[in-house]
Image (tube, rainbow, N blue to C red; front, side):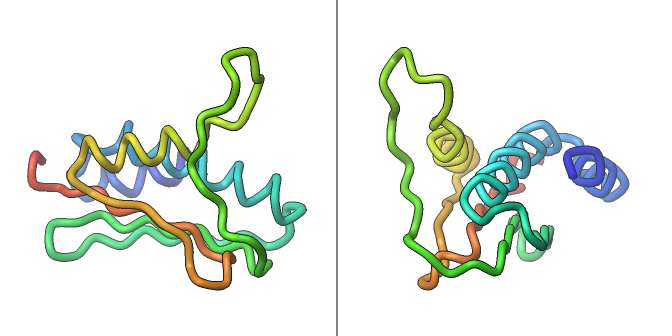
Length: 112
């Protein structure tokens, strides 16, 4: 999915956001696999009105994940914190659908 994301953005002339978007996609997909059992996961990339919208849908309703800082010696648990910080740095936002099955992130393309 990282390669697909990078290729789609690069082909649209959005190389300026490709690194950040690729990392966001990687973290959201990893989160979906870990928490849904890796069933069918759908990635959607949409560019509209100067915003890149990334959505990862795992089809499994459940508790809404939150970005929490893990202990310093923890080996995982930083993915959504990274997504949150990338979104902030790009004047964007991130969140989870009410049913917990879709996690999304929006990145502004103004700097592109």
